[in-house]
Image 1: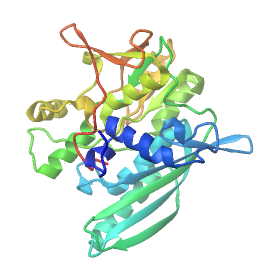
Image 2: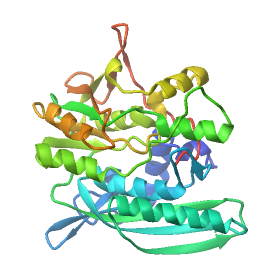
Image 3: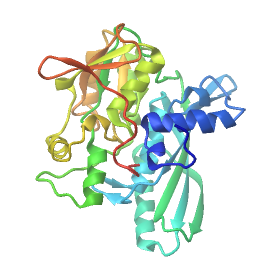
Image 4: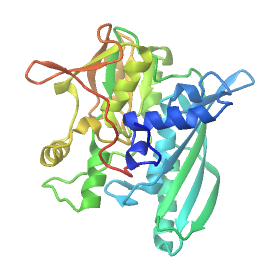
Length: 339
């Protein structure tokens, strides 16, 4: 069905956004490559070949609502999101740029708190914010943040590198960011608090690489919009392999389980902002998990599945009752403006 207007779902990850990107955006851009990874790859970033080195470049727009939420704010999100896009491609963050589009009448105190958060998160990585831009508009938007970053990679890690026999890892519980945003926005109270997982992950990924070597990290992706389901399906499709997940092995906090049951939304399709799906070579999975668990952002890391030859391009889940079913790609993230 041909549409003549953009819908919210077209920017929410999943199949709808992929169609928009491929049919409208890619079809109308001619020069799409400056290195080994180009716009056509639709990875978390792209590369620039410069004097024999690979510079990774990425950009991300942040329209989260509310701008302050349990566990973070739009400033922490802007830095973390861009750092993580670099990190999952194997790139050490070198510098960030941040552009702010601010509503006329926006609170000066709120802006100051956002800037303090940007500064703190940058220092945690550490990565400097070296340039930016500021605009003020009449539109009732609150504040939007656009962040770009560059990094240097000794070995580029793509989201398409999974190989049969590899193991699938994640550094902690899924769905925390999406449910935290939804509960805050809608004023839904749960018995246990929901807190976003938003956090920069370069130190965790670097720890794993130091432990097992970059050559044994075959693929990575941060499961943001569309959640774990979207990330795994993208990785399986791009590598033309099957991925089999053990449902009981996927870490999910009790607060997320409670919210999921109450709202009828699977945590597998909810956004994460402090998680990495890492696919590693057979024989290195235990060392990788041990390295993750020593990092503050990997205490609940787990091996959740395996890359298989069967069902190329598909994701299979072994359920708690012993059955198997496909995990389909979501049409889009169920929570708009989640990041």
